[in-house]
Length: 168
Image 1 (spheres, rainbow, N blue to C red):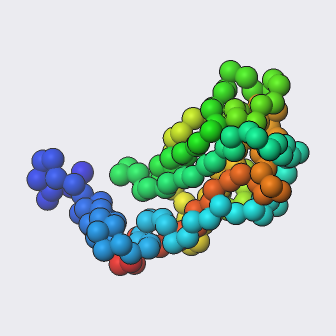
Image 2 (image 1 turned 90 degrees about the vertical axis):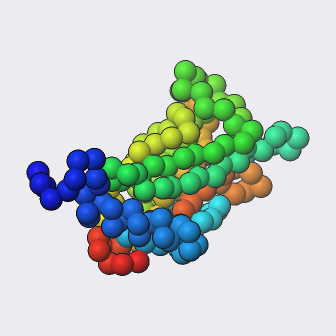
């Protein structure tokens, strides 16, 4: 226990990290110690580590879309928010008949599938120092990757986690 901190005050290390993150947000900078957002894409490249069968969205159907935001969690780690359009999470129908506008999402970190998502929010534990890529794909109830015009429906954020105290 640190007796030099007044009651209710944030620990110095946390305060410095919070100031760094907030400064970067205000200044519009890309990356700080544990601040994502260097790059964002709606990639069309399949994740090499994990491959599913495909389901192409037919003409005349509302095309699902996905986007994601990643923000540092005040207690450490990351909060991932998945935003979908023309798509409904349907955990109660997993492994049942596929529909192009419902199912679940798959979350990949650095090309490795981490989990299945049944809703908009997910907590990611701390990531090691270095570059990272987080990808979310939309999948049918039977786990098929959704595709439109030959491109997988997904969103990717790339960012760098700097060592604590690196001053970025």
